[in-house]
Length: 310
Image 1 (cartoon, rainbow, N blue to C red):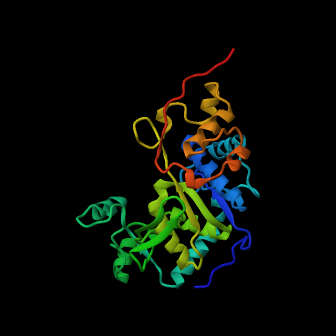
Image 2: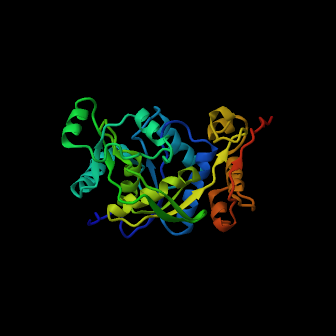
Image 3: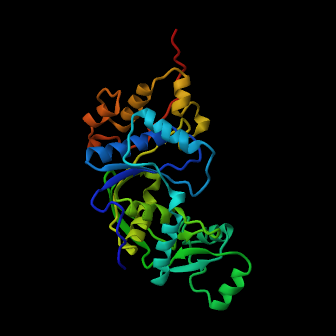
């Protein structure tokens, strides 16, 4: 399958791609800082892409951009909106369909969950229920509900190498490419957008490490090399679960209201990654850039006390 020409084929890039479902918390800002630093330290462009195909909270994208700018991050070119790239995404799906690599799926989430929970099922993986339906059965099911479109995967696992986690082999299933409302799904969108924007370096939270093999496999089917990966350990709340709004003041705006400066927040982010030298600006982060010395375990967040002066 021939590969499309990326927008910036000769200009490698890293990126940060937040979903505008709410304000960025310390964990999101930490990942953004890591992605920015990896790109700048390796001479790459750094791109900002808003992944707005799913739930969008009004005003969140604008606040996300403002917080990143206040933190001291910069990026190359305008902020990209994933929703503006839907025709491109669907065109890539047609490429896969023409190659016989997709099929319609009529399963509900409940049906998928029940099948994946059966003995020997892979948690969260699609069991292939609709893979070999007859034309008559597809027509009958289509009358009941619109289909999603799935990849007809030809492997069950795929290997990638991660800058922080090392070699990693993960499961590949028949992932959804287009949801039953016609919207491109996350795994398709992230792969196509990265390739078309020249992104060859993906830095994100390590909760997404299991998705890297399936995305790298999809990239290969579309004729693109897999990007280099660096999955950063998460920030966990006091309860040991992923950091969330319930854990107190966790956004830049909330911490500023407690009396902390942007420099204070940046210092905490850098320290939580494992940068031991004093850091007050993003220039300081680059000066002390050494991911080989970073922490490999999640960072535990403890609520910050109010610190008002005068």
